[in-house]
Each structure stands twice: as structure tokens, then as C-alpha cells.
Image (cartoon, rainbow, N blue to C red; front, side, top):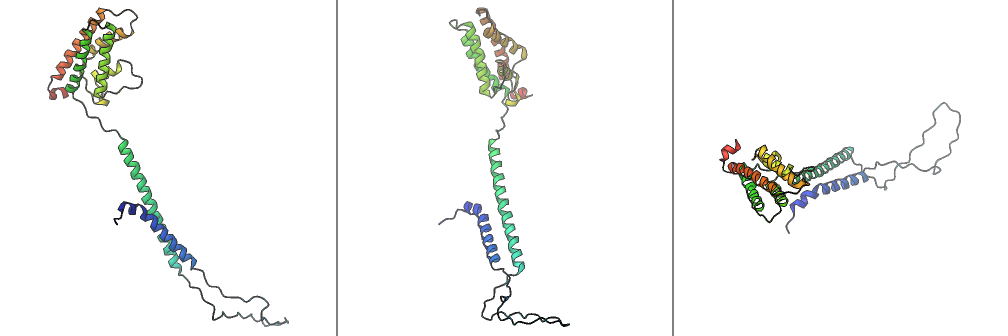
Length: 250
């Protein structure tokens, strides 16, 4: 029958400690020192009257030990010392093994919990993905059956979806324009490079805010402004997508 080595490695310190504890208990049980038997008072002790004398009183003889009484074995003191030392070493080894096991488990869980480093995206690949989102938005803007306000807001939402697709995370407290700004102006934490100029982005962001928050009716003029801003943004992104990799990384 095969023996699981991992089980033996886990439990051998506990077995060793148990064996040493048993040895120490056995040594302690046989290490009692023998004592001479003193006869009880009143058994065969002659009465000796006390008289004034210059000589010291005779000492009471000690009754010899019975020949038939068994004697107890004496354990050397060094053997007890060795047992205590071995017991301490075994306990130290067991505690060290337990601590090492716990530390290794915590280190493994910490390593698994650490997020993997995000690879930096290329400007060309990011620009191509954003151009695809802009093309879908331009098609929706050209649809006369779609309300201009809805069409402009839908174009911006497509850019937000593109930002999340390339790895730009939405942060707590972000405004509606922050996510797209980090997509087009770069997000070092997500490894996304800058792919558009600030003025072109600001132009389309202004049209989006007007369409979303304006209390007046959004007419075809706003649709045309959004179409023009998206056209300029698409032109910049197309140029970045066609740029050689060495030039884009410079």
C-alpha cells in the first residue's frame, strides 16, 4: 500500500513530540530516590533513663534495611537533562515547521491575490478600436429618424464602452466626460497611450454636454456640430492608426 509522503511530512513532528513526551514521563516515573526505612516509635526501643553525665548520650541505632525488600533503580541525572533538551528541540522543530507552513500559505494567497501587471497597449490598436466606435456613432447621427439629442448622447456612450473595452476603468467620482478623456488623452494606470489632441476632444465634449444638459430643444444644428466634431476626431485617430509602430512609441 502506497504511503502518502505529504501526510508523513505534515504529521512527523507531532509524532516525534509525542514520543519524547512519553519518554520523559517514563524517565520521571523511575527517577525516585530510595529512602532508608525508619522504624516507628515504640517498637523494640529500650528505655534508657537519663542521668547527668559528662559523656554524650548514645545515638539510636538505625535499623538495617530488610534483606528481602526490593530496591528501587536510580536514574542518572544526566539522562533527565538529555530528555528535557531533546523534548525542547522537538517542540522548537514542531513550532518552526508550523510557522513555516503558515507563512508559506499566506505568501501563496498573497501572490494569487496580486493583480497581474497590465500590458501597455499600442496607440495604433487603441485608435483602431475607437475609430470603429466612432463609425457606429456617425451612422446613428446620419439617421434622420433618430432624435438629435439621443444620437449625440449615444455617440458618447459608444466612446465610454470603447474605453472600458480597452481597459480604462471607471473611477469613483468620475464625471461623464472623465472616462472618455482618459481614453483619448491617455491613462498610464491602464497602459493606454494618448491618441487625440485636447482641442478636438474638448470640441466634441462640449457638444455632448450641450445635448445632455441643455434645457432648450436640441435641433439639427447640434447634430451637425456633433458630426463635424466626430469627423475631426476620426481623422486624428485614423492618422494614429496608420502611423508606424516605431514612430507611435517615440
